[in-house]
Image (cartoon, rainbow, N blue to C red):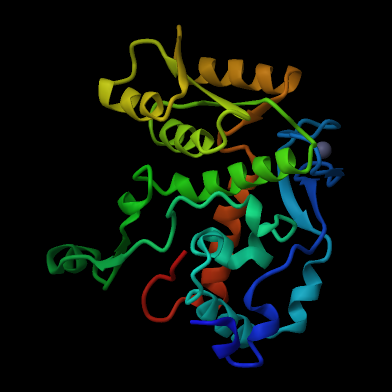
Length: 270
Ligand SMILES: [Zn+2]
């Protein structure tokens, strides 16, 4: 469908332009920090950081029903960057230009009704979101699409270069992190830390297949995490574990969008 074939009132917002003013806001001391550098915990108090749009209220100029129409029509576009989580550009990462978005087919997975036996046991009608159909076969791809699109944005802006993306994981996180980081090679090198002898060959195959360097660390997952945190505090490292604010952003905002009316009888799409 050509852009001029969309309803006139939809056209101004059909293809999002970069906007908003994103900052890291600390959950502890409420201090704010610029997003121009890689940051994972508050430099002042060490608490978790969340992404906050200082200009979020500008979106309220359009009512919820009209946003829903914009997002529904946006789905008909043949622009890859708007096919995944960035269909909700204004609510996810409004400062990120579409040419920085890494889209590998994540999101919008099928909603499948549970069988009658399970519904009888639960005492209610319910549905599964078949997130095994994401590119690395888990829901973590949405958050990784957000985290790596942001890093791509920093690289294109000349704010970082030669980043090492790293995560500690025994499964889905490492698979998703390595897969998305592979699309920014060679500007990004990817490493995964796993606890020694606690991972199956199947779990190893995904990060290795995406070209990540895999390191086995003596101990358990928490020991791997300590190494990742120490590296991220001292070097130019992109930490891709769940404390990454760009991953939290997608989980939080997709929930808000569903509550705000994307749900119509069955769980919403995101
Ligand atoms: Zn703080």
